[in-house]
Image 1 (cartoon, rainbow, N blue to C red):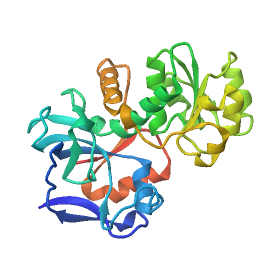
Image 2: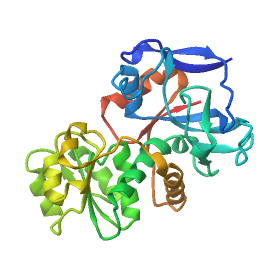
Image 3: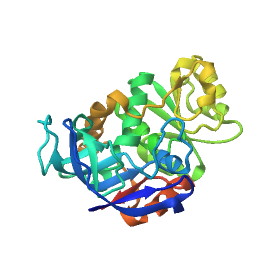
Length: 305
């Protein structure tokens, strides 16, 4: 038997509990992973709360978690690219807040020896999404990108990926996160009344694209700044779909493998950092989800096994 974190009903983090389960058997195109680290994302807390039940219907009891890094423990009959003992990272098919999880072989990349388990387990969700949205916005060298909630999980990756492409980046954040954003290469801009004027002052040549990772009502202003709704992409403002902006709901999607390879390459070159806010053992998963739900601080929260 193996340990896994599950919930029998939707609710607060107190509905999570550790259970004994039979390790899952991989299908033909899958591998089983002995989990070493699993990043915690805001969507994990929303799934437990039941906020995602319309988009992600679950049969309870259920587990949670999709970011994963670990060691291949078993391989499916059609898998040729991975062998038992390989160290990998990516996204899982079964919940990753567990001792063992399944993943499609195509959704994994090799973990470099010099990348820590905590960092490896934190890349796929926020990092993969950041890569995908920059592709969709077509951000390139010489352009100016505005990121709302730039100090958050996706924002932290998007700032660094955009800078690596040669783009200028403005990031909205509270003042306590301004030094952090400067360390990543972004120009910080404070939230609140007068935001549009502060953005225009910081980017006198204009803003070419906007990534909204905030969902706090900045869409009309963002459209006005770019002059083109299709150059605004949101991860949260689903009620703004009729404005003509891009709504992103697919995480890394088809860009997963390419995005992970770029993230790893930039990490190995010293051009991208992944701050870890705190690591929790599997038994403390409820506390980890409570921490991610608080919305405070920067850096990734990780479950380690």
